[in-house]
Length: 378
Image (cartoon, rainbow, N blue to C red; front, side):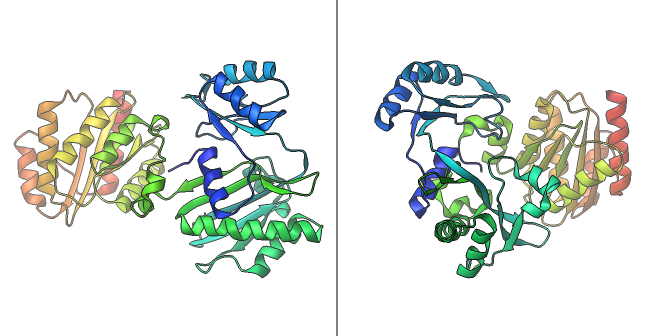
């Protein structure tokens, strides 16, 4: 779950990380009132869940009420990569001397959190990693947190001033604490700035929370901005399905996240493109299967549907019943390829055969068939 900048800053502020003051406004009048409290110049920042807001015109420094009226009026309501801006963050403009990057991320390859810092802040860290890897320091962090000596090493990598290093090291330890205590998959400050007055501030903030941990954090779950999420993904989550819309043409209905990932990989391997990740889970509830089909039939890009079911806890016959119910109730005009194996496979095949449908056993064969049917329907 992505948090807005103002929400991420609230988490940082509560943890003791120095963050400039700021107010969220939904109207030009509200923006003017906030700026009146802070004094000019101020920064107007669109609050939408995308990166690159500055390049897209969603971040502006203004020096007068007239400028603020114009820019806040322009940004509020604007469309940034498909997301409508409904609120802006008003915050005092800082006199920046130096900009750095600091982020806690999950190293999936090594299965450990990593602190990443770079003296080149304010730009995409992916660009730094790709073009100037020597400007990026990575420090593994275990469950005990970020030790003082590693925080100091990272601070020395960023700044030559011992007094500034001490402030940076403290912020890095606090950042690692937010990452751990809030079950985040990302906690990022970009830029972390040193002002001309010698302050060290988190000028921007980005936090991504692991969805699987939200039950432990009802306060964070309440921050979820549903307006920024796909309606189908929201409804699927409410129905107990794991669904993520992608940009391919082959709709996938699979039981189990591992098998779902393997299915998408195999589709790519054979030259196709999956239209979604959809895991119906270990349940044998036919209603889940019916609803999965309802979601897929809404997606006009889907040219074929692939059912890939490995029956363990999930019963193949219940999946078949759900599919047949969906076909009775929905207008399904795309071809369906079915692969079933496992618990109650025989019963499932008998149910399908009564409707003139067959199920394959081999996963590769099923994937190739789905790609071929999608190509024919294109």
